[in-house]
Structure formats: structure tokens, C-alpha cells
Length: 323
Image 1 (cartoon, rainbow, N blue to C red):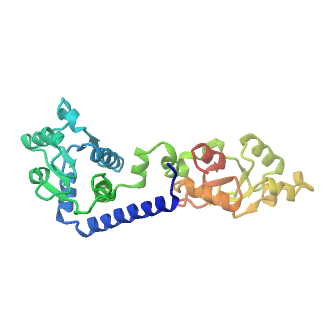
Image 2: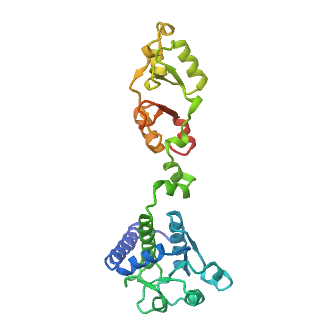
Image 3: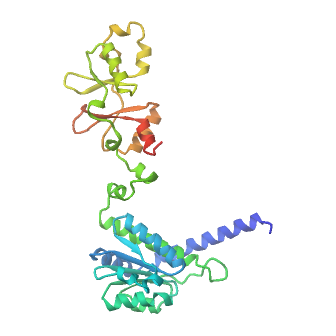
């Protein structure tokens, strides 16, 4: 069947705008139940158990993953599997978050009954006021009555968009309440691009004996040997107090080629070199190196001005997934 590009684009715009209006309605209608849901989860000793059937279940899996990665222990339990033994995954101390647009999904019955039997707090999210799920919930979150964006009123579109947004809102509200930091976030995301972006310079830098350093009065022959031994293509120059005062690069060597070996490191070095703090994000260090077209930065702790803590090479950042 041939594609009608203008019609496809018009459909896309209609769906996106209808879902955007649904999210506006969700924001406008957000009541005290949301705050109660946050307080209920914060007060729980155990996990947030998320459940839902069909498309609501797919959204529920994402919500559980977002909660878990932002400091709120959570897991997804499929309602059908719950009826065949997985109810044992829920216990006193947990909070159960159930998603169902109709609020009458039959597969949820056993799971909901289990929470009532054992006094497990139940947060229900549904699109029908007075539905079985919301009536039996300790905290009822009602989605606005907004038509699905499919045009025939049956394909989960606006309803699932609102569920997903509500789940994200819960996760971020809980994250902020727990004062969840970027370091905490990285602890749950050590791999991939997210982990790399949150890596600190201290985790990638070379320290100790690996740092190429010579004294300001050292002859250039000694500086060249240090550059060659350490393999960074640079050498830092320190004063009598051990503070970094300059750096010798390949460019400095070329500029002082005539009589180079008759000079000292202090005579050849470039003063006031670029530095970075150990607790700076490695991504920021890469941006600085790219902007200034350098491949190395000496790492200096602001608490000890001029005191070299390490050296960072752009290749270290590239290996970590930055660049």
C-alpha cells in the first residue's frame, strides 16, 4: 500500500498534540493523592512492587526500572505470574503500585486481594473513577478522562502516556526527597554512556609515580627523559615547594630547539598551564581539552593550590566512553 507522506505527518502531529493535551490535563488535575503516594513509598521499609497487565504492564516495567535506578528499590511483578506463586514476592513492608486504565482488569484480582489480606499499602492508578481498583486502593490516583489518540478509542496511547509521566513524576519526587546525588545515580549506572558522563576525573587520572614531573631548575635533558619514560608527551614543572608552575609540551620543545639541552625546564616551560580538579566531571575535562586543543591536563586539588594530584590524558577518557 503506497504511503501518503502528508497524511502520515498529519497523523503524527495529531497524536503527539493529543498526548500533550492529555499530559496537560494530568498536571492540572494532580491532587493530594500524589503527595500521599510519595509519603507512602517513603515510609515503606521494603520495595515498591509495580504491576499491570498488557500495555499498562509494559509501562509498569519502565516505572519499576526508573524507581530502582533513582534510589527507590522496586521490582515488577506480572499479575498472571503473581497468581501462580509470585505473590510471594510481596510482603509486609512493601508498597504495591498497580496500573490499569479501566481499573477492572481481571488478572489483577488475586494480586489486589493479596495486598488487602496482608495489609500491604496499595496505590492504584486508573482512568475510571469508582473502578474496583481505585475503590480498593489505599491511595487512588485517577487519570483524567481523555480520549485515546488512536481515533477509534481503544488503542492505549494517551492513557499509557499519562501513566508513564505519572510514574516518572513519582520517581523524581522520591529521588529529590531522598537527596539522591549524581554520585548515587552513577552507582546504579556504571556502564554505558550515562556511567561515563558521570565519571569523575579522579577515577580516570594517573597518580603517584606515573605523573611526569621535574623541578623548575632541572636541565632539559632530564625533562626529556621524564617525558619519554612516562609517555604522556608532556612534563609538569614544579617550584621549590612542589607546586605546579608550568608545563613542557612538544610545542615548547620545537620553539626552543636551538640550544634546547643548554636550558632548564623553567626556561622552556609554558607558565600557568590548564588544570582540572579531581572531583570535576571527566566529561568537562574532555570539553576543556577539545576547546584548547590539548591532550593532557594536570590534576590539581583546589584544597592544595598547585599541588599535583595526577595527570589525565584524553585517551583515558576515550577508553571510558567519553569523547
